[in-house]
Image (cartoon, rainbow, N blue to C red; front, side):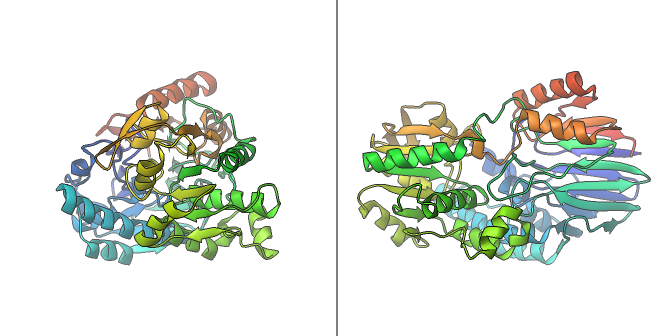
Length: 452
């Protein structure tokens, strides 16, 4: 008898946490932060609703906070198993978790929010972390074999296939958009019996994938014409590197003139160095550019602003400029200071290039708010709020359905999670109607028996 338990990532995009219970093994997939909700800090510090010490292994699909953010707490609470991921995911997670800890400490000291773990818990987690490249099998208790395959979402992202007794359970993590500036498309896994998949864009299409570069070029040219500021709240991991790559190609091809570009995020700067370390995980065309001598993450007039002092100096640079800063949903980081300074200026364009979760400042701005509270200050929004959907790191509705249609020949059941309720339920219905699959959107805390 086996059970799949849904302890996060249901009814919303964040907080992925799924436990597979087998007769002789307990395997966890992802252990992420709940984000966006104003009560999220307290929720993230609550005890896990399962016996942490009894879990044999944790598989990490990728290094975004909503998939790794509670791992130090898991270890602090008694997890004694092994953590598995690809090599880039471990390196990225180390950087991301240390950065998240600094933010947690800051918010705890300033706002009185709880601290879920200490810095030593990050070190203890990394000490338990083992890496495997794609397609290298991992032998687990209970005669379970695990394999990682390329999810195409961010550097080193993976789908996890668990096999036991001739049956397969595929966990997608987040599935990449096609095409991506830097990454290969998701690999298709075939002949699984069970599937647990994401649904961030389960009810929407990315209509701007083909023209996204020309749209970016247009916003940059408009910024130059107005001698204004283009602000891009970019996720430090993947979206920032994609933006740098696109701007690099536009500048070096002479399509746009070089103007001051500020990468204002120590985290994004550190992540970019990891991208340079693992170029073999990039798509062939990007690797070819690198082999020909192009530093794809550097170009004339790009400045890396590591210190807060350097960040403050950006305001003194007059004329057209681009500021890329985190966080991508404007729920923290240096982007808030720039939004506070520039949103009241009609020469400013705020360009959203990623998903904005409900409750975040990014979502409020995306929804057309004329006034927003930033750093406890009311800011009038006179800037242009723009959006390019094609840079999303997530597959859209049709890409999700296509991926399932290629691999689900004998699927007994599909569990749709990691999306807002509307998106998940829409995708469930499509999978039922178009592919004839037994698809459901589980509820928080639901425990479902499976034949595995």
